[in-house]
Image 1 (cartoon, rainbow, N blue to C red):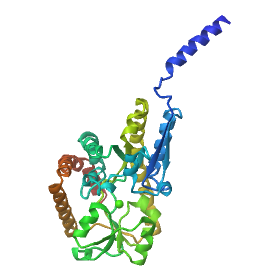
Image 2 (image 1 turned 30 degrees about the vertical axis):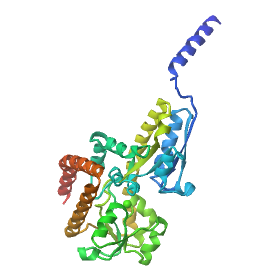
Image 3 (image 1 turned 60 degrees about the vertical axis):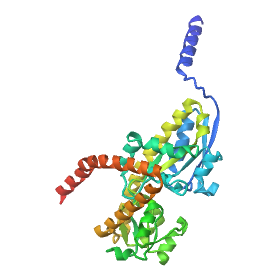
Image 4 (image 1 turned 135 degrees about the vertical axis):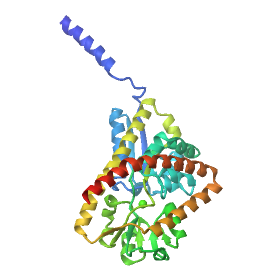
Length: 358
Ligand code: CA
C-alpha cells in the first residue's frame, strides 16, 4: 500500500511538472470573416485549418468561428469589420484595399513584380513585414501573409492577341492595377461579379477575363468556352492576407498569440502547396477534356507596352504618395538582387533540363 501511495505521489508530481501551465486556461472565442465563400477552396481551407489547429493546440480553449461571405454578405468589408472589432480576424487580399491606401497593393502582388520565392524573402528578410505593418497600423489591425497562389494566368481570351491594336476596345474583366495598365492600352476594363463571369464570357458581353490559375479556373468552366489561355504578367505572386484586430491580439495570453502566429504561417505555406498541386491536376484534366486549348504568351510588343504602362503608373503614384514610393523602392531594390539569384538557380535549372530534352 505504502509503495503504491508513494508511486502515486511521484506520478502526480511528474504529471504536474509535465503539464505546461498556461496563463491561458482562459476561454477565448473569436470570429473570422473571409472575403470568399466557405466552399472556395483552397482559399477558404486556410482559415478553417487555422481554427482547427489553434483549437487543438489550446486544448479546446481558443476557438475561432470562421464565416464565409455567404454568411456575413460583406466580401469587401473585411478590413472595416476587423478594424471595428465585429470580427477579431479576417482572411482577404491586401490589394482589395487600394481605394483606402494605394500602398496596400504591394503586400499582395503587383504587375511585373516579384515571384513567390522572391516576395517571401522580401517579406521575412527584406523589410516587407515591417512595411506592411506600418501600412496597417493606421487601421489598428495586424496584417500577416495568408497564402499565395503563385503566378496567376493572364486569362481566358476568345480572340488571339497579336498586336497592340488587338487590345483596343477589347472588353475584359481584370481588376486592380493590372486593370489600370490595360485601360491605358485601350482595353475596355469591366468589373463583373464572379457569379456572372461564365455567362458574360459565353455570351460575348466580355471578350476576355482573368481569374487565378488552373486549380481555381477549372471550377469556373472558362476552358469550355474560350480557346486561348494566356500566361501571366499581372499577378506574379498573389499573397492572401490574415488581418487581426490589434487590441484583440494584445489581449490574448502570450501562448495563444504564439499559437495563432505559428498556425497562420503553417496554413499559409499549405495554401501555396495545395494550389500548386491543384493546378497540376486541373491543367492535366483540362488539356485532356479540351485538347484544343492553346496556351499563349502575349507578343513582345504588347508585353513591352504593358511594362511601360505599369512603370508610368508606379511613377505617378510615387509622385503623389511618399509612402508608396518608399515601399515601391524597397520592392524594386530587393527584386533586383533576388532576381539575379532566381536566374542563376531556378530559372537556369529549368532551362538547362529543357535543353536536354529538346
Ligand atoms: Ca486574378
